[in-house]
Length: 241
Ligand code: BTN
Image 1 (cartoon, rainbow, N blue to C red):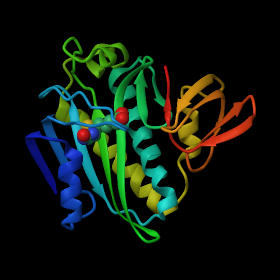
Image 2: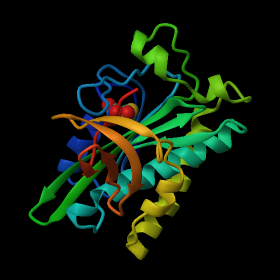
Image 3: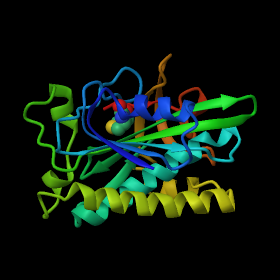
Image 4: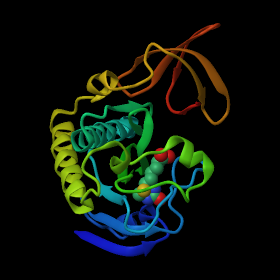
């Protein structure tokens, strides 16, 4: 099922409400604009009308809760692949944990909100914001400094949003099907595309800032950092600029 809206608060809200009302796996919500698009933490997601892709998909994966991060990694790999193919020769990389960079600037953000019932995942809502044709002149300053779009980096502007959506869905569906049948962590492929491995990083986990050398990605997507007091595994967080 695909429902498209001109304007919503956030496709995450609509998809979550539908998931709670038993919407089936694969239900897709798209919108031309969001009045309260959100990112991780307290970040807003810049969602100007009809410029970019704002979508959420209801998933009901038969995965244990500890593998929820596999979905984020699968979505990041999908968006990276689509962004790089659309904007070649621009280089697309993953910024741990859930961002896709094009030529070093953020082109896509991924948000997974899951609901658990005991030891199983009831549903997960996968949200993807892919900056397709957005220009950032009117965006908040911090967004202007860090964001980009396919149109800003690639040679084929303006991009056809429907075409990019179709590519995203095809690629995600193939990867997701493989994930569920093979039940194999995408971490190895994911790690090959992570921008910051081998570099010094500062990570805000929400409760502290950890500083050190980014060493490797575990099968759950956690990042191991070598700090002055030894190795730390960080499950999630935001790499600070
Ligand atoms: C992040 O980078 O912190 C995640 C951004 C996720 C943005 C997308 S846009 C579609 C969906 N609806 C939202 O409100 N957020 C996600």
